[in-house]
Length: 198
Image (cartoon, one colour):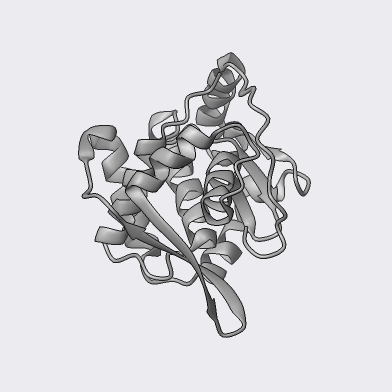
C-alpha cells in the first residue's frame, strides 16, 4: 500500500499559509502539490507527497488529498479513512465561504509548522514552488498546469503517472522504473462530485 502521510501534507499547508501564499483554496492547493511533486521528481527522482494524481478539467489533482478536503468539509465519512481525516483536522481548519457567486475553500492552521516531516531537498522545492506561485490566482495556476505534459498526455479522469510528470527523458525513465516497483494503493478512495472544485 502506498504511504500517505496526513501530518506531512497538513504541515505543507501550514507552510504555505505561513509563507503568505495568496488565493490558497482547494484548486490552488492541489496544483501546488502537483508542482512540488513534479519539481522534486525532476531534480531528485522521487515525489514529496507520494500522491496519485488524476487529470481533471482544472488540472492535475492528488486524489487522496482531494478526498480528505471534501470529506473534512462535508463530514460524510463514506470512504473508510475517518482516522486520517480526524488527524488532518487536528492541524488544518477548513470552511467554505461564498465569494462573488462562487464557493471558496479557506484553510486555516491549528498548529505551528513542524519541519521534521521534510528533508532539506523537499523544503528547497516547497520554497521554489512558493516563490514561483505565491501571488498567482487559482485560475492562473490551473491554466499553467494545462501546459504540462502530465496534463496533456493523458485522457480526462485518468491517472497521471510520475513518468509523465517529468520532462527530461532520462529522469523520466528512472521515475518510470520506481513507479513500476511501487505497491499499488488499494484503498477505494472515490472522488467526490467535481462540479465545484478541482
